[in-house]
Image 1: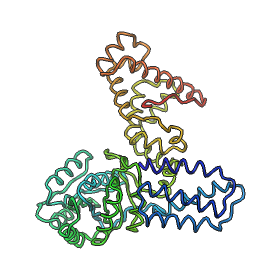
Image 2: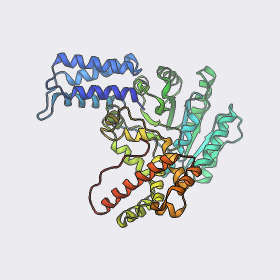
Image 3: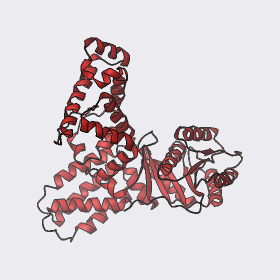
Image 4: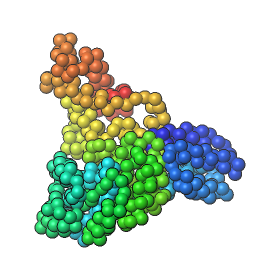
Length: 438
């Protein structure tokens, strides 16, 4: 996510921090470099100009704070302006009278239906009781997809008589009241392109639903096309917030900055992968830190809290104290780490890791290989890896489809981790072994 933009800002920030003095001349030289970075990242020209004007206004004439290097102060100005430009603070979903509707709109292919399901899971985890409503009556596959996703995520789905979007919504509202569900996530119709028929249908549905929230789902990979479609939607219907999808594949990241500027609407959520958990609230200040290579520890902790089972964590803590960490425990930790999202995205949240790992390939498929190897072991081998001799390694290799060399590497890594855990149990700070997947 934002790989190209982050890489360029990271190099720029490291060079800037070394400057001992800032004058009007080198400030203007610096903002020209920032402007170049933004335009290369596919930020629209008006958005880039507005961003640069904001930096100049804050930096020219500002006093250098005592004890802070001028270069570092200028980096803070860029960070603060970037956070402001992205929206300032996260704006959570607004709810009205129960069952409160949330209208989801967007073009086909942007991830509208998948986003509806992800949002449903997100709200369910926060204590809400959502109902997914299939109001795309023209495309049967949309309702089928929503039903499949609802079943996977244990979320209720309402399809209704499929006659008109309005009739489906009204029946869904009555159903939610009877079942005690407190919010409706309304998956509206989409098209491959914007046309008057689509907009008229959405206008009619919005007038019937009267939602406190209408979220526009936009494909972040389409760059300036996403900006143009967002502007077109805003002209015809009342948009209260944005959801940017497919940001895991968006190397440049300019759409996020441009869409927020063009629409004037907050980015509320972002999709960073295909899994249901790959869905994040968009915190502008945290995102500014990630774009500038400063990490985002708060979001990392939140992901861990949402993915790690508290009971299993307590059991693991007891095992660490007793120094009984096994390969089964190792596998469980790998699965929980994988459930938190793409590994390269997680590492990007840790300050300094991205620049330190420049050029290092992080392969998520390695996790599956490690789990397959451990699954091919007997319970005795998982609990006591030292009994795994040459013949056992060959059997595990056949069972997992991995080479003996890969099995040896896993066992060596686990032995290092076991030693680290033992030192941890004794109260000493251990050195970290090389992580799998690198």
